[in-house]
Structures are given as structure tokens and as C-alpha cells.
Amino acid sequence: MATDAAVSVLTVTAAGLGCAMLPGLTGILTSAALIGAGTGLITPLGFADLVSAEKKPPGIFTCEEPVTTASRRTPSTGCSTS
Image (cartoon, rainbow, N blue to C red):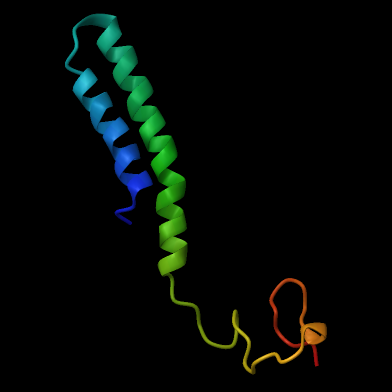
């Protein structure tokens, strides 16, 4: 999942960890905002990567036989309706 978006989001989180070293309330609030934003943005990317890497059992989520005409496809799956 080393895409450009994931790297930039992780950079935001790393910047938040760096801001935690700033003194006083400014450091705490800045680090909390950046860490929260990074975590909130990376979570959907991680789940999307997990779903795309998941192996699907044959015959349940895929068509068993190829569909030759567009009129025989169901709108949701593309599988034949015969």
C-alpha cells in the first residue's frame, strides 16, 4: 500500500508526532490535530487496500461462465441471468 497518498498521509501523522515535542498547549493541540487527521485519512485507505487484496472464493462473487451479450447481464454483477 505504498502509494503516494498513503505516504503523504503518514507524513502528516509523523509531523504531528514531531509537534508533540513543542512546549505548552500549542504543541499538544497541534500534535493532536495532525495525528488525528493522519489517522482519520489513513484508515479508509488501509481498509480499501485490505479489501482489494482479499481472495474471493470462485463462484460466489464472480461469474461461472463468460457473458456474451450486454442484454443478459444483471446491473449489479455483470453475470448472466439465465
